[in-house]
Amino acid sequence: MDFKLLARQYRDELLDNILPFWLEKSQDREFGGYFTCLDRKGNVFDTDKFIWLQGREVWMFASMYNKVEKRPEWLECAVQGGEFLKKYGHDGNYNWYFSLTRDGRPLVEPYNIFSYTFATMAFGQLHLATGNPEYAEIAKKTFDIILSKVDNPKGRWNKVHPGTRDLKNFALPMILCNLALEIEHLLDKEYLERTIDTCIHEVMDTFYRPELGIIVENVTLGNELSDSFDGRITNPGHAIEAMWFIMDLGERLGRPELISRAVGIALKMIDYGWDREYGGIFYYKDRLGHPTQQLEWDQKLWWVHIETLISMIKGYRLTGSRECLDKFELVHDYTWSHFRDSEYPEWYGYLDRRGEVLLPLKGGKWKGCFHVPRGLYQCWKTLEECK
Image 1 (cartoon, rainbow, N blue to C red):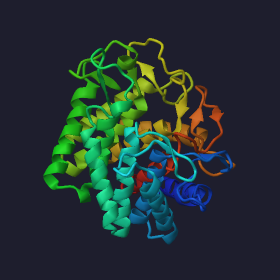
Image 2: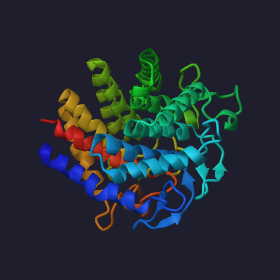
Image 3: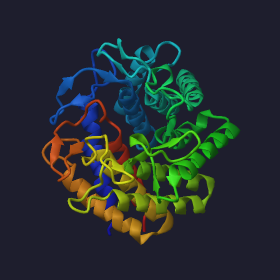
Image 4: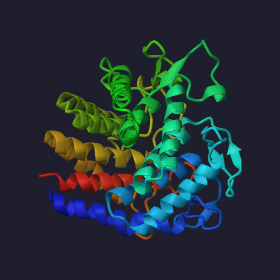
């Protein structure tokens, strides 16, 4: 495998295709912030603004400015989005709404914890890019609110009746593994280490089930398995993404045993999620093989495959695992041949089980300027370090 050639492929796709698309097509020059509902050609088909996707795009362009090149247009894009978020995205107390109208009026209340997590990431990177202390303060205050919500992320908007089947979800400890490192420069060292230890424990000792050899999405408050729709559901992509977060933490903490364990789990989750008939990784599975309540269970999603690419190339770089490299090649071939649009910029997000395009959109309520560019960047930089 020619790592230098592959690194250029990922770099060029990021810098020549993906980032120019979002820079040109998504910025709302009249009201600020970003359009994310973009059709195949990049035309806006809906003007609602989803806070978590606004935060992701602020983070992305600030991150590229900080890590790749000090391009003024990237910083300008990030700052204008951050200012829109600062002005309209929360209720005045950093409770971040889920969505707004184009001009910034609240549409959906602050029920979704990921509005908070990506606001924290956004303002953390903006502070690094600009040195503006106000951005640091927003990130820190929002992070404190996130930690206060760990036991009940949806707060008063939680639909579940308490006391009957109380479950906790994998997504929040998983995202905190990444978020803690993202805002490391803003946190007290002891506070940071305590948060990281808790997140690693939750991901690797609570949601990873050695008796099953896989990661589950929900467990009881007593850390037991639940034989219910929510208790049986697995999301292979989530688990695989979390494992590269753990690899990064293992490298940061000097814990090779943690890296090795994360690599082993990621490989298991790919085998578990791989569609042996049509290729690609299933979106959802039931751990007991029952029908899922998610009707989209057999779709092939962009982010699942991109996160798998990151996890496998990092696993190879950190451990030299030939199996990681083989899996990277397998998923690379599937991803570039199925998700990349050869006619228009940006990538498709949603394929049916057979790998045919299900929705031709390039952005929507759930897909924005995040997984594709972050994945291309991570793979580019990791491939440059591979031998």
